[in-house]
Length: 173
Image (cartoon, rainbow, N blue to C red; front, side):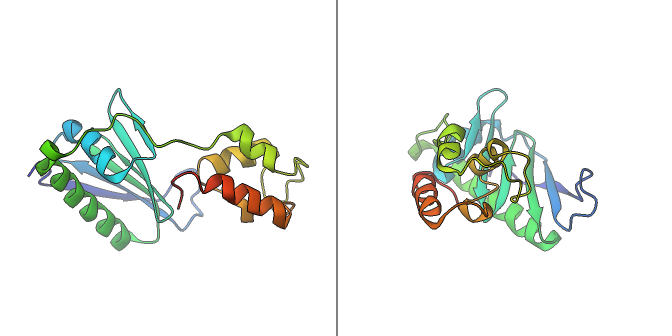
């Protein structure tokens, strides 16, 4: 067993004190640097950073980042949800570590949608009805997985279908 314990910290984002979502940080008792590429291979990380090693996942609308000494989870409904995700990840980390001889480590993130390709599929009206100042900002949020085709009020049904087909090529939830 690689990861034996952690200390959990639950916080409300300082940038948006009115937000109801919570963030959870698990401060790990052990350094898990060596397992990060194996975890990336097993769980299909959205983003992988080589130095210092870190892998990010998008799971059920949450962004989860695994670092050498901490795990960060955003947009939690409550503390119980954070506990479940951290415990699940602890199990995944220990399982990947135990099976590392059978796993080919991955040092690359999943392919990502291109902002300009998304922008090409948008109406480019800069109407601000989506809550963003420009279609470029909206396209960036779509590429990062924070927004989807349904979040653009100006997008036609055909445009929505095309954007969804483009995004379906990538591992978004």
